[in-house]
Image (cartoon, rainbow, N blue to C red; front, top):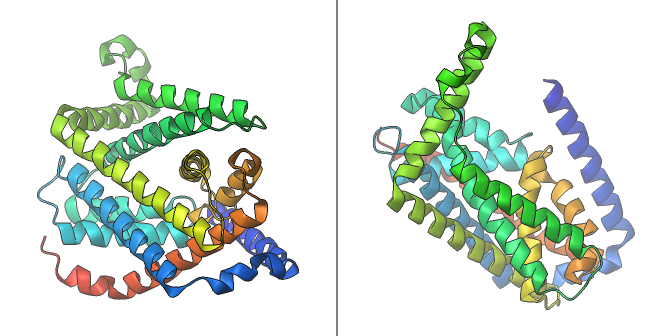
Amino acid sequence: MKKNIISSLLTSTVILAFTYYVFTNLSDFQSLFEISLLVIFIVGLSKLIKFFFNGLFIQWTIEVFTKRFSLSESVYVSILSAVGNFFGPLLGGATIRAVYLKKVHKLSYSFFLSTLAGYYVILFSIYSFLGVISLLFISEDTGKSGLLLFFFLWFIFMLTMVFFRLPSRKKIKNLEKINQVIKLLDIIYQIEDGWREILKRKNLLIKLIILALLGLLVTGLTTYIEFKAIGVSIGFAALGVHTALSATSILISITPGAIGIKEGILLINSSVMGVTNDQILQVALIDRGVTFIVLAVLYIFSKQIKSRITI
């Protein structure tokens, strides 16, 4: 309850501050009113593709632990998760997904966390690597070295998580004399067991990596189109940094959809990308506005999708 209150207060503060900034700098946002419907359609379509990709990721990983998970059901869960993340606090989408899978498919929370860990390890490995490569091609030195070090260390950490193994239970048997520790250890080892089950399926791992790369491509192209829509030609290296930083905002998603957090991270590093703060905010307005519309429409039609689910 306290987390929800804090998150709601933070979100309200960010929205009020953002609204005040927009209304006091209307001239800087004039180009938003000149955006064509075609751009809105393309951005909206890209959002649909990303939700479909997320649905596939959910389907492929959940099928490791439970009976067949249909495509229509995976898309439905993906929509619920996206709505929860955009409108709810503190990764609300993951909570909705976990509860649904527990209730409908009897999937334990430990194994769900295994699929979530798999998602983040693959995602952040790719995006941190993208951040490193992109920064190497950026000539701007202001703030670049610190950012480069962050992405490099984050990439190494993600690779370590792939191959890291917990010690044998026999080696820590002394800890298991404490009841509370036993329960915690059971959960941790179950999560690792689930992650190992995913890793055993080499074809699955390759498919998940390809899916993440396709998602990266769609995200990058969408951002490029959004910048072009406001008359800004952003370089591919700067685009890579923008995409990597946007993904990083998930780590500290203490507000719905990481609103204010994502923009704050991008604003701090705008000089590295060679774009202005106003341009960052204009692109954010396009992206969040279209996402809101798409999610609203999808949620309305989610009941029709649910009706086609056979469990």
